[in-house]
Amino acid sequence: MPELPEVETVRRGLEPAMEGARFVKVEARRPDLRWPLPKDFSRRIEGLVVTGLGRRGKYLLADLSSGDVLLMHLGMSGSFRVAVNGGETTPAEFHHERSNDFGHDHVVFHMSSGATITFNDPRRFGFMKLVPRHDLDRDPLMRSLGPEPLGNAFDAALLANACAGKKTSLKAALLDQKVVAGLGNIYVCEALHRARLSPKRRASTIASRNGAGNERAERLVEAVRAVLNDAIKQGGSSLRDHRQTTGELGYFQHHFRVYDREGARCPTKGCGGTVKRIVQSGRSTFFCPACQK
Ligand SMILES: [Zn+2]
Image (cartoon, rainbow, N blue to C red; front, side):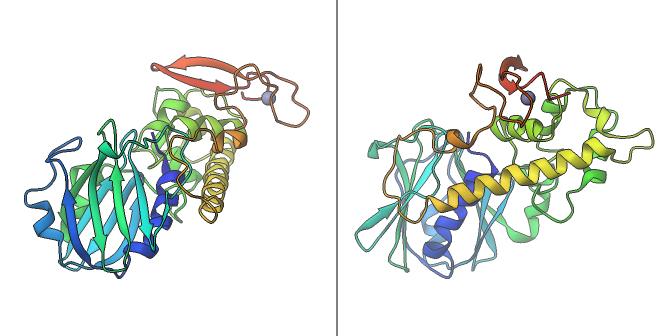
């Protein structure tokens, strides 16, 4: 599933084609993705201008000139293609597989910028939704989201406060979108490794007795930010020269320290440990038992 860095890279790829542009024609080739598309979807957004393209957690938020926000989620397998002047790009190299089957092109935006933006999603866990801007914070998808990990508000105190009293593992806490928005399995594993914290550690142990953030919380916040910023940088750099890499796997993989690297030598300097895979809540966790405590 795409995580924050992929979604942010997609946002940056779509921005020049969408921001300030009008929807000239919108093709909804099927009535539903994960959920039904909004009623009269095409008719409701044709003619509107995208005044801004933002992101919250793993959601893309296109502000429309009507005062609505077009909320888009990539689900498990969703991706966008941007065709302009005969060339086509696919923003962001994803870890997950992307389809090159045009039969899964479900929604097509023809923009006044000259760009054609196609949403492809074989498994159809993605979705699009229209929400009035003034109701956005109250939307069920938005209102429970925790802080943006790259935002100013996210710090050790906030993270520790969210984890204080939690009996779950640190890994489970970081995957909880109420604790922090946008992290998934990959970047949680990577951040915990960077912070040298065990994914099995109790979440509450990053808070001191009075609920304030301790030194572990400081380390973890720093690691989360670093991991995300690095991944965005990698994704961004692939935008320039990149054409239709549909289905290609593993760009970020080269940059993973532990994720999907079971049996590999731990990359922490002087550690000498071996990356281990365990299963937590039904999902793989990769970590180094030697340096992650
Ligand atoms: Zn190690």
